[in-house]
Length: 429
Image (tube, rainbow, N blue to C red; front, side, top):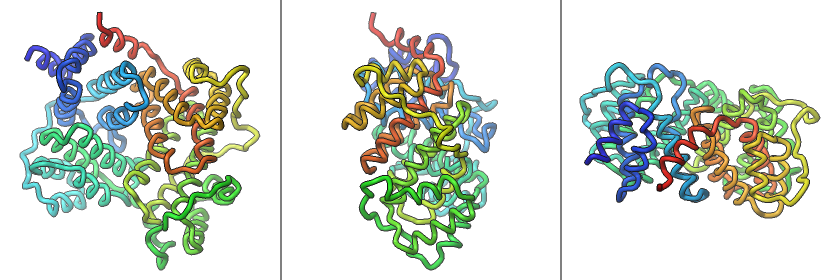
C-alpha cells in the first residue's frame, strides 16, 4: 500500500518525487494501467475545467494519444512519454475544492436533455450514475456533439479519445464514469454550429453520406480540390464542396485532399501556430476513426483546414535533400536540432523509399523527448493522428503528410529536461 499511497499523494499534490512515485507504481503488477486509472479518477474532479473555457487542458485528453504511440516506441520511450504526460495533467489548474456531484440516474434521456439545456454540472452528475460506461456510450455522445465545432472540434475529439482510453484501460467502472462525465460536461458547454448549419443548407437534397469510393492514385487528381480548400473564402468553399458532393465526390477523395491541404497549412504555419495548425490532423483522424460519412461533418473539417492561413508556394519552407544516407538516426537528430529543411528532406526520402512507418516511429521518439506542457501536447496529438490516418491514405498523401509532420516537430521543439528527469527515475539503478 505504501507505493499506491505515495503515487496517490503525488497525483493530488505533485512534488519533485513525482517521477519516482510513478516509476514505483508502474513497476508493480498491472501498476502502469492502474496508476493511470488512479490519476484519471483523481484528477478529473479536481481540475478547474471552467477556468480553461472555451479551451480544454490537454493533460487527460493527451493520454489516449500516448497509448496510441506505444507500438511505435521502445519501452523506455513510452514510459517517459506517459510519465511526462501524467506530470502535465497533475499540474493543470485546480478548482478550490474537488467537484462533488451527487450521482444522477444514469439515464441517456436525462443526459441528452442536460447537454441540450447547456447544464454542464448536471450532465457530469448524470454520467456518474451510469453503472458501467462502455465505449459505445462515448460513441453515442460523440454523435450527439458531432455538429458542434466549439474550440475547433474538441468536443468530438474528447468523446472519441476518452472512449478509446477507457478501452485501453480495460473498462474500469469508476474511471469510466469520470471519463464519461468529463466528455458530457464539455458537451454541455456553449456550442458553435455555425459551420454545420451552413454546410447543411448547401447540402440539402444531397445524399447525406459520402460513398467511400477509391482513393485517387495521383496528386493531380486532387489538385483542384486542394486549392479550393486552401485558397477560397469559406462561403465559396462550402458552395464548391456542395457542388462536388452532388457530382459524386467520394469520402476517399475528400479525406485525402483534406490531409494534403492540412499538410500545406502546416508547412505555412508560423512557429507559434504549429500546434494549433497541426490540430487539423487530430480532428481528421477522429472523423476517420469514428467512421463518419456525413457530408456535413466532412464539410466542417474542410472549413477547419481552410481556417488557417496559406502562403505563396515560393515562400514556403521546402525539404533539403539529405547530404548523406537517409536514416532514422539522421532524421531524429535533425528534428531534435530544429533543422527544419533537413528534417523534411530526410522524412521525404525515407517515405519515398517505402519506410513511412520508420518515419512515424522516429517522429514518435522525437515527441517523447519533448516536454508536452511546452506546446500543450500538440506534438503527441499530431503523431498519433498521423498513425491513425496513414493506413487509409494513398501513397502521395502519406508522402505529403510525413515531411509536413517532420517540419512541425522540428519547428516546435521545447525543453527535454523533464523527460531526462523521468528517464533518471525510470531507469533501474
